[in-house]
Length: 126
Image (cartoon, rainbow, N blue to C red; front, side):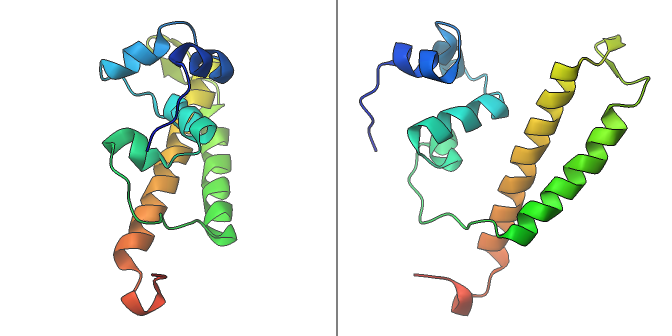
């Protein structure tokens, strides 16, 4: 799968600083940034992380999305309570948003993986 987009344009369109993609090549993969890149390129997140094309990825249904939203909502309430520290300082709103974004991506990936693994063959679309 190839897209002929200059790296500088990708960085600019995604709101990244110059040279940010090079840092990704060094093995630093913030999940929220990978999601932005996958959406921009229209590629599955698994393709960006593994480099392999996979069969059609299971999709989340409205119930799955509702479950994730409820968990994130209750977690956000916990994270916004006074006393949460991050690196010895009170957690900033940006740090809380980053935590919630990473949690959302992780939960979405886990739900999709479980659908792939535990859906009986008779219900899978070929």
